[in-house]
Length: 419
Image: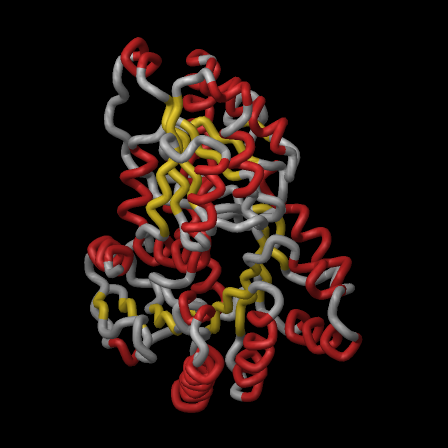
């Protein structure tokens, strides 16, 4: 359970970890030699780094890859919700409220006592927006500027589904943000329309992941002879397309091909296992449940194909991790995926909810070693071109430094190359 935090801490070099996010105490990253009282950036992360799902992973990758330098800000990670598993607990509401109140006090104290700093707010729809309305109101009351970083699969639709009063409150929150960050051009376009903010400072900054520094692959002949290993990483849910994935794996096209699959993630593991048994594929499917990032990296290192047939995504971290590991990616054209995957070169697209099309696509990749190798090579090249986390960390830290110094917010698409 501690592996993500430990790995991030090792990657911080001169930064100091002074508290843990598993409690109500925040996690501090101080660059260089300044004392932790000089914290510049409050990084709001629901669930913290370890229990914050894709957002926690992305923020952990960012902190571990921060550029070294005198201008690099010091960061304080604040859990605004509590670990994800509280969602299944009867007492989740009062305990989550404690996290929220603690975050509000920290924000107020920073604005009142220090009178310098910046709030980086990671936000999605539904309950996350309600919490962030409260926390950004506190920030505005103490004159603390904030960045809104949207990770939702369709935040504009969530806004439009709310009542008139809530829409006005959300629009007001966005209208005074020092910077808005979205994952892709589609999200930028729909957000401007939903909030009627044509001139808002919106930066398109796709997610990014670290380079796993791949070990040499087996010889092509050896790899072709072994069963293809398919990996799914994500919550075992209908939104992630797990029911269609099981049907696709059980399709006649896949029956005669050599493959095995690992579906890793939290959710109704026993129900999924029972469904796999009913479809006759239980002996080929492994369901380890939720795994930490170290285990996920090891799983990807052993895999050939990354499959994620989601019905909705912003920009799935598992797709980027599949690219980074040079896996043949089979996914759906949802969210910003169409801005990441180039069909037939760095991956394949299938329509959401179409088990037959998914089965046919998986059969193509499993049954054609040359196609699989082409997709793997293209995936790795695509990752190196655009989605390595060092460029992401440099962009985000430069943005924070600029806003702290009173410089203008950024807009458009960030394409800074690696130095």
